[in-house]
Length: 227
Ligand code: IPE
Ligand code: IPE
Ligand code: MG
Image (cartoon, rainbow, N blue to C red; front, side, top):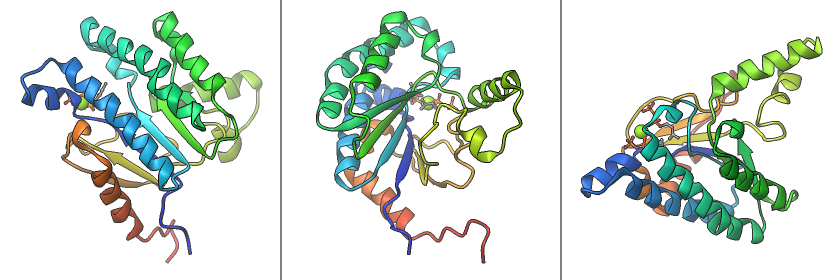
């Protein structure tokens, strides 16, 4: 019997803007609430025995949002990575970054990299932060790397060329905020993930809602093509 707690959960943290709008607040207000919620969920996931939590914080497509919103988001990443996320890894969580950080403001990239480098590599829990991440770019980059090496790939060796090298595939992908799509998240890795969609906006997606998603997952039968 497979354990019913998923080993790796991905979250598409959507709905921050609408959450703020409902409160007649700027979008940045929603992003701040979303980051606070993300930290709380990471602590909770660690507590209930999830080994990997991948949070989709910024897609490659999101980089085309207005500068004002992006600057606000970068400010949040700076702040949270030097305080709250740091607290997570000081308390024994590993941090991994997936995405193209070279296109971000230099100091933000540096702060994220430091989070990755300073966190304990052998921790039992890993927070994977997807930032300027796009599944299609990830695949195309991997193909180019294989071509440059002049090597044919198989599923395993190809996986090692992705940002997620060394991480297991996600068992469960949750999307908050009501949209029923993956928006370029873990395109290769999600092939056999269970999907869970909820209308709850991300800042409202609390531990109770998270547990509800895990319970829903635990009742599913994963067949992987078998009968
Ligand atoms: C998700 O929330 C967070 C990011 C994409 C950075 P949105 O900002 O997309 O919120 P909505 O979808 O507009 O409510
Ligand atoms: C997906 O949300 C990306 C993140 C949550 C980081 P979006 O709000 O950008 O997705 P679309 O544009 O509705 O597909
Ligand atoms: Mg959105």
